[in-house]
Image (cartoon, rainbow, N blue to C red; front, side):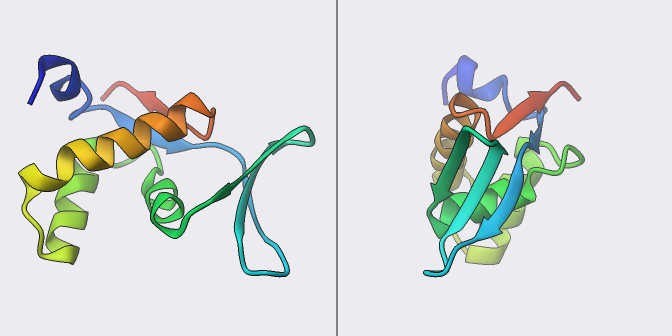
Length: 96
């Protein structure tokens, strides 16, 4: 795992925006009246875990235990999803 990826382990992601569910059952995160995003279920689940209280490491451990998959197999995948959410302004990373 690269140093850059490692540097996120102890950061605490916190979600931004408000959740809505449309008529088709899609989860929509609205940041403001001009910016809203439909999230796939996996991204929505990760977004919901970003409370600002758990570190990235805590979130990966939680999902690893819940899914029965190895932590090392999950870390990079989960971090990439979190970084995508950050790029769209849906989460931000707080320092521990």
